[in-house]
Amino acid sequence: MFLTAAASALLATGAVAAIQDYPMVGGAAMYPTKNIVENAVNSKDHTTLVAAVKAAGLVDTLSGPGPFTVFAPTNEAFAKLPAGTVETLVKPENKAMLTKILTYHVVSGKMSAAMLAKAAARHGGKAMLTTVQGEKLTVTKGPDGSWWVVDAKGGKAKITIADVNQSNGVIHVIDSVLMP
Image 1: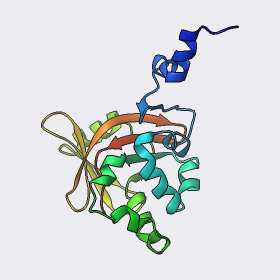
Image 2: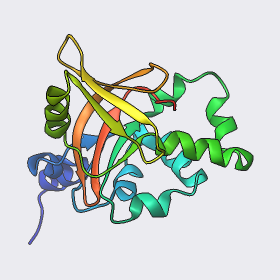
Image 3: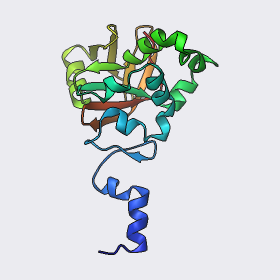
Image 4: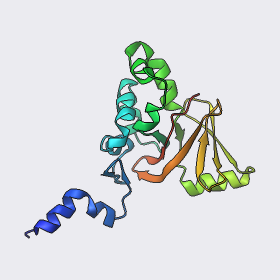
């Protein structure tokens, strides 16, 4: 079967992914048949996160069966950190601190946005989650209806894209880096 130029263009731009209702993150379709790492490497908005995951040695873990819920900071989120922070964290001598920060963005199990909302409703508007790192995150609804993740230090990250399903869990894209 031959494709017309228009059909080829649609395939090349990811329109087929949109037709299939696969969320687009960082200009790339996120396929529910791929794992967290396989999808993240295709997002141009998550190159810093991918580099950090590689530097921390977490690729195998996040490629594993899970399931995991990952609150995935964008490149812009990492850019909000003080100058030089990312460059310092990815150095081999800082692997333990980098791992602590990254695993603070991961919760065991698959928690959809609806599940987070139900958990928050059952607990006075705040869902308390224990991260893989061992400390707590709080998920709460803002006055404008958006959902926020609050870290142990009171820092807040807005969930900008929810429910990006993966074969081994779910990603919720956030606009700030959370700190344990």
